[in-house]
Length: 147
Image (cartoon, rainbow, N blue to C red; front, side):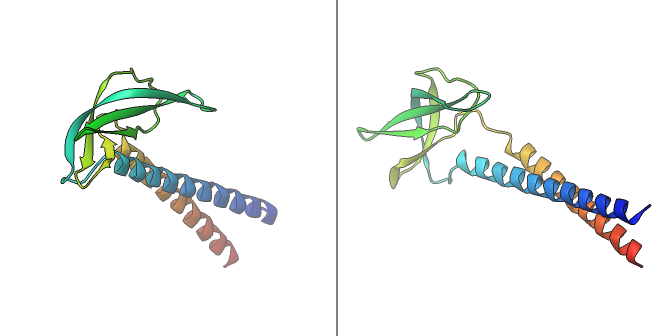
């Protein structure tokens, strides 16, 4: 194999490896963020909320919708915005809300369809590991050629 081909192969493998690594880390971080957005500490109190508004997010393909869920605590009205979803929500639908008793405005809608964060985390780790493997393979090839 000519020297020029080896350099092109090295650069190509590095670009692929870096892309896989970056994609994997992105998937993993998104999955962990999604998980934190739909869980709450065990000290939080459960209540029922009602979908009181639905917004179609602009410039999203496929169309994404975000529900506003209203809930009442001690004659005060609070609301929480859902994670966006491609599924349009029905106004008036009931949702389960967990809220902090010390700060009722900090509610989280735990009744919405949950993203499969564990699958996304696994895919992210696999992509990152494949990316690292490609980078190691590429570096080993370069080091082998130099000897």
